[in-house]
Amino acid sequence: MIIRQTAIISSIFFILTSSLALSAEPASYNYKKLQQLANEFVQQQVTQPDNGRVEVVVNSLDPRMAPKLCSSAPAVSFARNSGLESYTTVEIQCTTGNQPWRTYVPVRIYQYQEVWSAAVPMSPGHLISDSDIRIAEIDINQVRANTFTDKALLVGARVKRRISAGDAIEARDTCLVCEGETVTIVATNKSLRITASGKALGDGLQGESVAVRNVRSNKSLEAVVTGLNEVTVNL
View 1 (cartoon, rainbow, N blue to C red):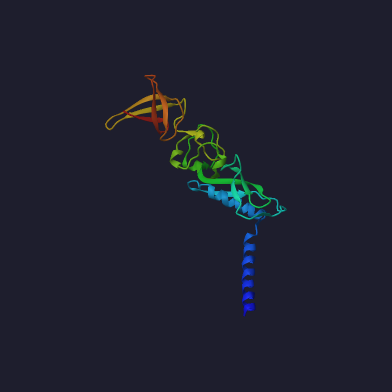
View 2: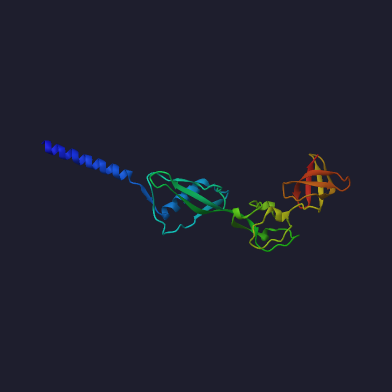
């Protein structure tokens, strides 16, 4: 009976010590797992653009890389001087165990958004119509200037710079009121509407504020763009 109890205790002790040994065994991270860690980290950091989507592409690590061991979850962060840029680098490191290690994973971030682009080539002076533009998905990280998601801001605007078919239309490419052009200044209140001739001192799109000079008085004022070559000021 004593022998049997001793055997049972020995078996339990063996199972417990085996479980502890297994739980203490470090996890292995091959190149695929490291790429997955980098992808999951960046996905958690990025914000979806309005009416858009994000695509994260992790550069392939060398498949010949020897698997790395770590007894705890590796720390994942952006590398120094890296962040949510188009091209970034993720740092993965293990600080536990006898052989700490660090790996860097290059990542490409695409932020796609639907914006209005040119359906046909357009030259300076052209007035944009419905048929001139179409919706296209672009990587907004590759566009330096503001683009358009509101069609109403574009139709009727004048092209300032040559735009190729397929190009996203940028704010610097167009204007409803263009610098140096003659404009109509509308001064209005609830019961009165007065117009005067003026000259635009800057470029402006629908709803934007722009400086103009009254040709008759030679005085400058701020007015709101309300149409092609038209600005309005409240009396």
